[in-house]
Amino acid sequence: MLVVLAAAVSACGTLPERRDEVTAEVTRFEQALGAGRHDRLCAAFAPATREELEQSAKSRCEQAIGQAIEERELPAAGAVREVDVYGDQARVVLEQDTVFLARFPAGWKVTAAGCAPRPQRPYECEIKGG
Image (cartoon, rainbow, N blue to C red; front, side, top):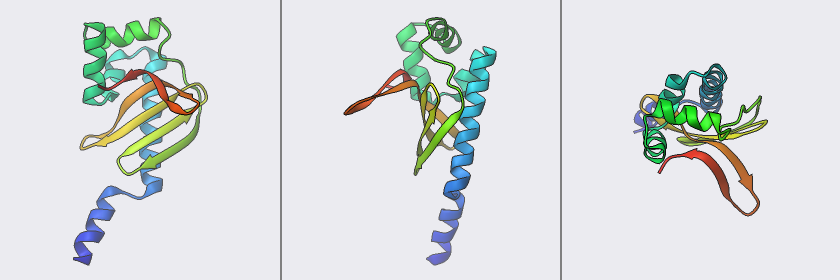
């Protein structure tokens, strides 16, 4: 029993490892944003987030994210200020944005971006899953 538990815990990774994974994913996301790589941005989204973006814009993800960038709904975020990991969920606070992620079998995926805090209320996010 102890061996099974130890194997399960080690498979999940330690908190510092998870923070590093999350930070790396957000860095890739921000680099794709800065480079205008809509295909990479779409690949970084969680399935429900990508689906919601496509349904809202009534177009493919690559076109929808391009439109969101043009309308300045997705800000250039700046440097990472804080990373919080809670099991398979994470929040990354950047200089100009907050990004939320979830862990999937294929790795960490962006569930919401373009998020701003609101006092006593949930974050307001420009891009989010349904």
